[in-house]
Image (cartoon, rainbow, N blue to C red; front, side):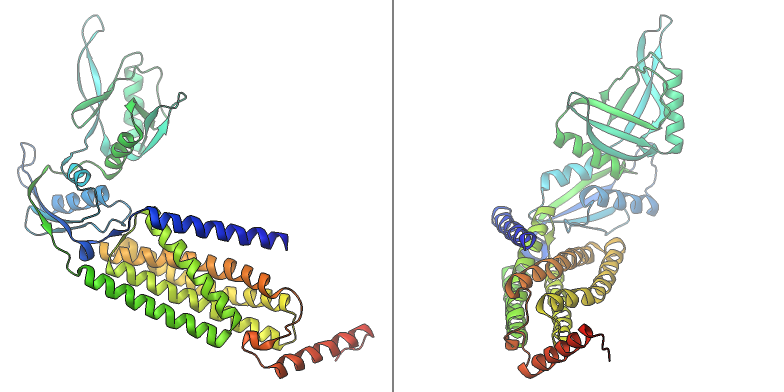
Length: 433
């Protein structure tokens, strides 16, 4: 019982934290609900790029998408509208200044080797052939003094290039250029064969994280220029948002009334768990920076229905156990255990589907898949942990004295208990049917 009390208060604290987050952090709404900005970007030809091909445009679109929407939750959309132009639509709650910077910054990383005179003095730099294309991943880290730096991990080809560079110029500095500017000039102490390097400097965490995001997204395959930018009105607006929430609350209210009418006290417990589930899920949306579109809200509402479905499976199993003459503690535990497999299989199928939609779908589909997946994961915690804990604290461990609290008839329960008692008496004297 002590553990159940501790878990109860942990759930209460988690609910309070969720309420605080919901009230403190603003809700990010998508372009369809709040409007935003529309930017037209054009790929540029250069001395080295005489013609912009479709492959270049595809690569440019993919790189920009990784830069401005790396997690698929910002609801920023990119689409090609002409041979050399991309249309980027950005929700109002996004950091427009930061998006502009990421759209136009080339993010080219180069390692340059020193040019030495007869006295081994460095007189200049030339490219070594080691660039950002040889990276597999960049990460933010700290040195022994706690200063921020950038960890670089090279692919096999890059590791070989870096080993050769550090072997040939041991005792000399090499220059690390980012966007044409020197970020660091470390002196090579020994040959480095592990395929890893570090960029040090006077980094703040925000600056290091910005550069890491750009490095992981990759350099632009072709330079791009912003041609025009204008504001976009919401396609649906406050009226549609209001109607969506009203529809959601009406639907939720009807479901909650049904649960109380059909399952009585367990139904009320499920309704309380459902409110807790909704608060936790919405708080997770805000913490992770999910931008809610109408599709995302639909995913959230659908996950609420799945949370109710899990409770229905559990309660029906529990009622079966009570009809079989089990005590409350045994019936509740057995009901949850027997329903878990069905709940897990159903939710895992949904999560797998969400993963496919997230990785293969458009940004709008990603928003729906992400909100649904988060909701399903939290609903499993709500059904298995919250509801079960409240059921044990409410009903205890003895026999069910008031079957109507579960929506059952007294005759069913009494007959079951009498049959169970007879079996127990027979077992005492070694008599088995």
